[in-house]
Length: 232
Image 1 (cartoon, rainbow, N blue to C red):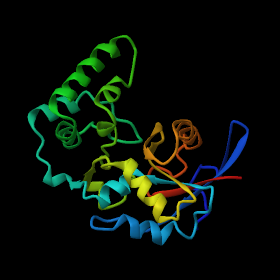
Image 2 (cartoon, helix red, strand yellow):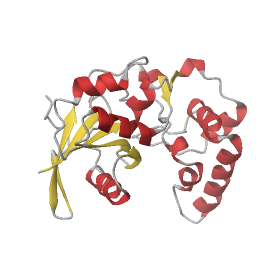
Image 3 (spheres, rainbow, N blue to C red):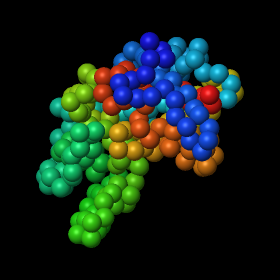
Image 4 (tube, helix red, strand yellow):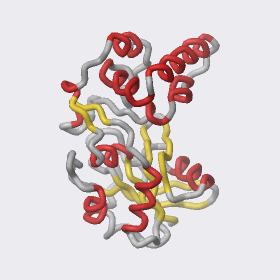
């Protein structure tokens, strides 16, 4: 099962003349209270080789940091109900399109920043420009993950925030794996992706986004929160 690709996703991709293997690593469901280092030891150590890049979804990092909140525990303010109405929902993620996720964005980013992002977005949408809300609100808002149809329980009833100090997490995991492989904490979905923190330089981060742009880990019940990039 380790090297079995997710539905519709190829195991290899060629970028700038180099072919890379993309190896999804199947795991159990990460739960609040799990230790990330132990989890990586259990599932990645036997897979990662020198020269590889291990990519870890931001969601499991955040969950192990205690940044997953049951929807029932979140009490959205009136502003969150109002702003969430203007967020475009997609099949790939609800984003801030529900009051509970918008409420967490207001808490994470601050009300002034979210209001400013909403104002900029309202103006630029008139001119056909999209994406300015998240460009202004920043990665903390972009990384907030609400439930979708394909979300694995118990996170189908939870809001997960972005991870704290993802670059430091990547550095720690690289050391944990012996230092011979790079590590990146990624926010990848079927609409694109971002590197939240890594041990790579900026050029390598941009290349990694290109390698992962079709979201080889999948979007739903695949149970593949880790993956390995390896030059073929």
